[in-house]
Length: 141
Image 1 (cartoon, one colour):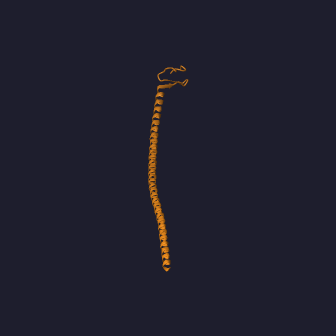
Image 2: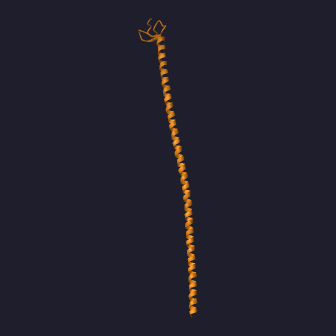
Image 3: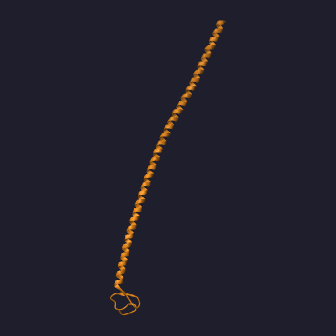
């Protein structure tokens, strides 16, 4: 009977350790699957993070390029405004010269008109220089 009890205890111990080993294997397999899934998630996150970082850098570069282009456009507009201002000054100077020339022409025309006409002392009418009588009132010169 002692042998039978020993065999039973041995079989029970053997079954216990087999179940224990199976349980440990299942737990290790589950933990391994969890660790593998976690590692895959971390890798996916890292890949996404790297892609997002690349996109941010590209956007940053695009923003910097846009800012440079805006500054260049602003500088070009300032140059155009300076050119317009210079043209206005130049045109103003030319207009001043034209006004002076017109005033001289008016003076010359006034001088020529007064030399080619006389004024009648009786009625004040303008008459040609070589006339002997006033056309309006008939006064004799």
